Length: 127
Image (cartoon, rainbow, N blue to C red; front, top):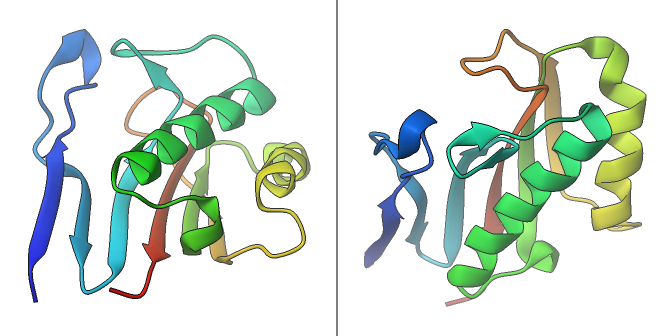
């Protein structure tokens, strides 16, 4: 089985390289590292709705680079800074995944950066 890594994440504060791949592909699976609402090394302004849209856009960009789409996502892990944002987050999330959502876990967590949401995903396409 071959393993393909999609470059180190260079979107850390100040454009620094972070010590992990944006995604790793193995055996038809694509494991996408946790994404936040970051653009040009900074968290975007806005609440949970805006940050969820940007976070999912960042996931989609990585999926597309690897030849996958949201229809290939089989699992997501979600971390929310504030559990009161759960229902607003869900509304945005559903707008992307519709009636065929992937398996998912969502928990509250203290974030490593000043963001409201982080999402990782696993996608699958038959090799």
